[in-house]
Amino acid sequence: MGAELSDSDKRRYARHLILPEVGLEGQAKLRDSSVCVIGAGGLGSPVLMYLAAAGVGRIGIVDDDEVDESNLQRQVVHSSAQIGLSKVASAQARLEALNPSICIEPHITRLSTENAFDIIGGYDLVIDGSDNLPTRYLINDACEILAIPWVYASIYRFEGQVSLFNYRDGPNYRDLFPTPPPPELVPSCAQGGVLGVLPGVIGSLQANEAIKFLLGIGEPLSGILLVYDALETRFRGLQISRDPKREKITELSDVEAFCASASASTNASPAGAQVDELRADEAGMMFHEVSASEAAERMSEGWAPFVLDVRTKVEAELATIAGASALIPHDAVEQEIEQIPTQGDILVYCHRGGRSAMAAVMLAAAGIEPGRLYNLTGGIDAWSLEVDSNVPRY
Image (cartoon, rainbow, N blue to C red):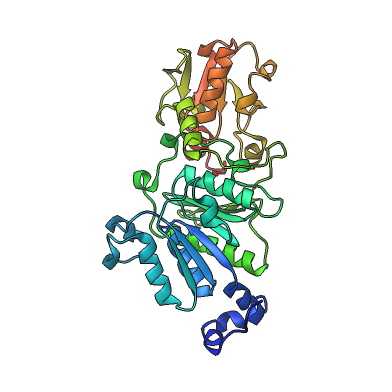
């Protein structure tokens, strides 16, 4: 523990100091702590401001973007006067004005496999404020190798989610999402929009998790995916467990290529494809694409396909479609093909339709008549949106 708090600090943090869970010792912990925030946008804005206001002594900011007018609807750390300025420089100026006693470390760059260790090494905690899958996988892998916990969040339209990964023996991002969905099934906020206040809610939850972690108080969100629905003002906590079969990450891989390969191999059809649309993969095999609403309608009329869930066991514990016939991870369908009936239609689903398309290709290659195979477009996520809102989204 460093020096005692100054009189100025005692005045500034007075409302913290009267909390028994914080007090003088806790405030000194915050002052002596360090957090690296990846992204100074919608999520990064509230995270940065609340951590600075709370007195976290060293805050790193990583971003290579500039402030645009379209950012100001939700990225509240910036202002109209900063349009065109580096987001890192804009955020740094705002935080130093808010709390001049803390240290802001600017990193005007994009996190990459080349710089990840140099940037995040030495911080106590990493917070994900990014907006793309490759960066998220990179944060996850680098943090596992460096043994640094990180606070995950994502937002889209009216929904957000938060969790704490790599905390002690808890799960990480690859336990929740072993493989990335194709980009076309994960539209960005620029494509799909986002309620301006949503990153404020979710980013504040991230800051709260960070402060709890740094102080060592409360129950961490490790092993829990907290999902917030802004339209219903409802929170749900979904259990996540570590996959015991997942190999420990020991080196950084090319996450851009990893995510791109998932897109190339799934080549998913656009959402909304109907049941009479046949789809060809690169090898020329054909199988059906069926939307969630069309599948549900056909089931109500008596269609009874064998419903095959090709997600992981961890994902199946989060949410499942009622009446699913079997759970076989997509990369094991060829080895477990004896579980697949030799007659009748087969409805294959995963999270958002990518892995199930891969599974359909593998099943067809293994000898199952492609005309029996139906890929659920948009996966269980589309089922929740179009058919059964009681199925949790994650």
